Length: 150
Image (tube, rainbow, N blue to C red):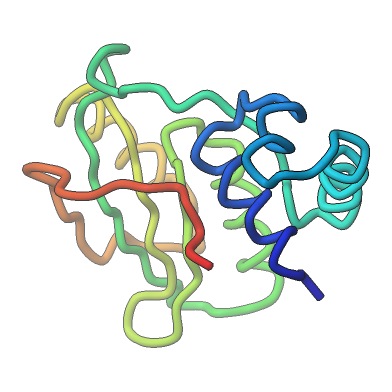
C-alpha cells in the first residue's frame, strides 16, 4: 500500500521525471537515502513503470490524431491474441483499448495527415479478424496529460 510520502514522490516525478533524488528529498523535507530507497521500491514493484520524454507531435510532423474503432466479428481467443500482437507492432498506434459493446477495440493513432491514415487503414484492413467500424478525426486536442491523479 502506498503511503503519503510514496504518493508525493510519484506526483513529483510525474511533474518532472528528470527531478533528482536531492530535489525530491528537499521538497519533502527528507534525506536522500529514504527517497532513493522508496523510488527503487516503486520501480521494482512496477508502480513506476518507466521514464520518458514527452514530444510535441506537430513538431515531428505527426500532427493528426485519429481514433480508429474496430470490431471483431469472429470473437475468439486466437483472434484476440493475434490482433493484439499485430497492434503492438504498429508504431502509429499510441494506445489501444479493448471494449465491451458494439466496438471491440479503440486505437489512438498518430500520423502525419489523412493520407498517412489512409495507408494505416489499408494495413488494418489486411487483418482478417477485424473490420473497421468507424474513424474519428481529431480537430483539436483540448487536454492531454500523462499524470495519474492521487
